[in-house]
Image 1: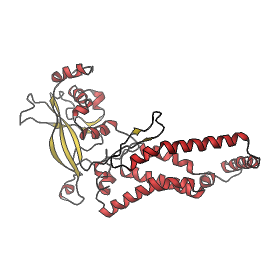
Image 2 (image 1 turned 90 degrees about the vertical axis):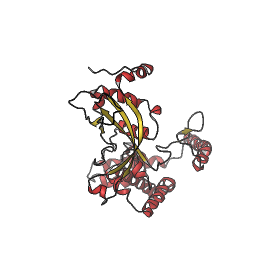
Image 3 (image 1 turned 45 degrees about the vertical axis):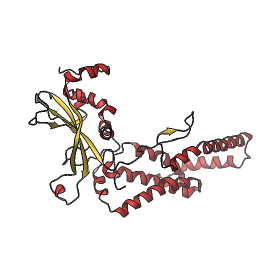
Image 4 (image 1 turned 180 degrees about the horizontal axis):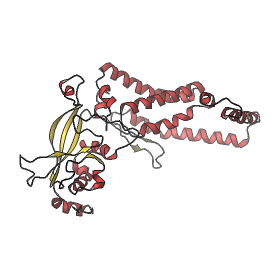
Length: 331
């Protein structure tokens, strides 16, 4: 938690302030996270009240995650299964008590259902119970290697442990990086990209960090997929993310479809850039009240080096052909 708020894919304004929390608060967050994810799920099996408590805690936990980060629709979808923890009695206050209202109709249905419960169980009910218990035992048995993996120091994420893929380990983020790096895409109209006097202008994305003075955005449950992918690309190389060279080619042609995915185009109303390059920077949150924050900066950055070298359309021709991509045109 010392690093999560700063290094998550697309931080929001709340994450900026959460990152500044003292160390003991981050330790409490970690303890609370373990309690919610490892202990609370078993509340489902401890009776009605504990089941309702499970639903409340899980939903509140997801709300906290939504407030502190732009994790797209992931947290919203995670809340859906918890809705099954609330029975009619716990949700009754949401509905009218008038005659022929929802409550009255549900009460009538429950009365009819109670009549069936007094009848002896049929043979098929016992078969279904045996089948359900058998499936439970099977899942428990197949989950043994999954649990061993989760307890291992060499934990493997997003892996199935049997041919039928019945049980697996899933994690949106297998580990938390301690530093945030960003790929900043720049363009120039200069003839020589290696000229020290060349003027390079930056493309600004809709949500990911770029401009140091741009306030972090709040978009959940919406999802800017390009911004998200740029986060992954930043801690890999462009050889592992060939799509970013494809993006550079589209920007060299000023393609409207691609530019619509960005917040700003420094070459709008001008000729397209002659060269595009990717620069690698290390980003850190500024400190509230510090000298950078006083100048309106949410971020501090330091250049690491080039991410991909300057490219132009002519130089990309062979690469695009090798990938079977149509070469963007300047029409």
